[in-house]
Each structure stands twice: as structure tokens, then as C-alpha cells.
Image 1 (cartoon, rainbow, N blue to C red):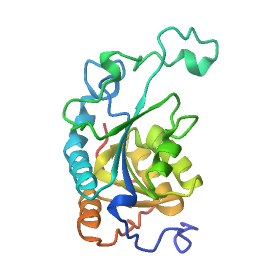
Image 2 (image 1 turned 90 degrees about the vertical axis):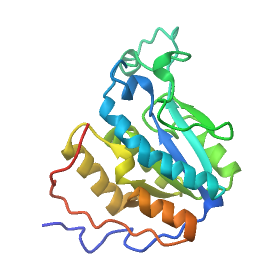
Image 3 (image 1 turned 30 degrees about the horizontal axis):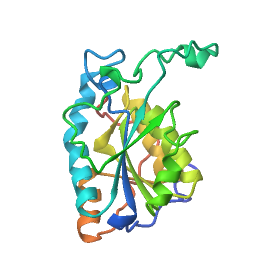
Image 4 (image 1 turned 180 degrees about the horizontal axis):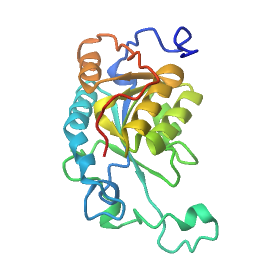
Length: 221
């Protein structure tokens, strides 16, 4: 039994405008997405086509494109256990670069993050507020870690959160479905890249997927 089936916070359609929307690309970096990367899984590159469509629609609609990239200092010499594990995406390294299939333009913005959430002690919120952004479209890896953490903080900060299912990926179907289910019921709208592109082009409303708790057969990294 699903006690939240009739109490979803995001059952209504969402209408977005290009000039108040930001497309955030989270951690689509060589170390995470290239088979030569330290934590690389090349299946993530399958997301690039859908991500590029959303990025193009956002740019054409007058929106903001932000690449939210995890980076760590080479000379930090950390003492805390979490920081000791951050031995990837070093500043200035090949592993910290955005994967080549993604189109990056000079007008796009880069925000560096040091933890899972793109908002945690970064200037992402300031960048978006300076641009008048009220809606964020989250794309990237991993759905259940950095994408989800960013979705939570975006919601807490008052943004409308949109996550297209074909632009994010987890390591397992369980992690993918559980994260998207929680986002669709409590934090935002779960949709597709086609719906986001249509919304940015014509103003058509975004419908939230009415996901159920059970895990279907689905793709994973």
C-alpha cells in the first residue's frame, strides 16, 4: 500500500518560461562518464543526446545553462574521512572536464561543487537568483546521489525542480526508480526531455509522472 498515492505534493501541471529556467548539468565529467575515468562508466554517455536537446531548447528560449562540476584540490591533504575518498575530478585534470559529446558554449556558466549537492557552499544559488531563475531542470549522474542531493536543496531554496528521466542515470534500477519516485512525490516534477523541450518552445505544461513504489525493469548504468 502506498500511503502517499493521494497526497502527492506535485500533482498539478507545471508551466515554465525560458528566461526563468536553468538547465543544470551535474557531473557529466570524464572521471564519471568515460571508461578511462577513475569512476567512469561509459553508459552515462548515452544520456548526452537527450541532454543536448534540453540544453539547446534552454538556450533558444533565453534560459540559463549551468555545468555543475565536482572538483577537488590536489594539495588538500584531507584529514576528514569523506574528503579522503575524493580522489577524482582533480582541478585542472582531464577527469574534471565535461565529456566531449555534450555541447558547451561560451555563454554557459560553470559552477564548482565540492560535495554531492550543487548548492552546498557553492555560488550556484547566487548565480541563479542573479539570472532571475525560478525553475531548474536537473540532468546528469548519479540520480540517487548528486542529482538527488541537488534536487533536495533546490526544493528547500524555493525552486521548481524538474527531472527528465532520460537525462539522468543511477547504477541500478532500484536506485533510479526510488530516487525518481521520491522526487515526483515530494520534491518536483519527473518528466521526459521531450516534454521539457516542448514546454520551453511552446509553453505546454509539464505533467508529473505518477510513479509507483514498485521497481519496474528499467535501464541503469
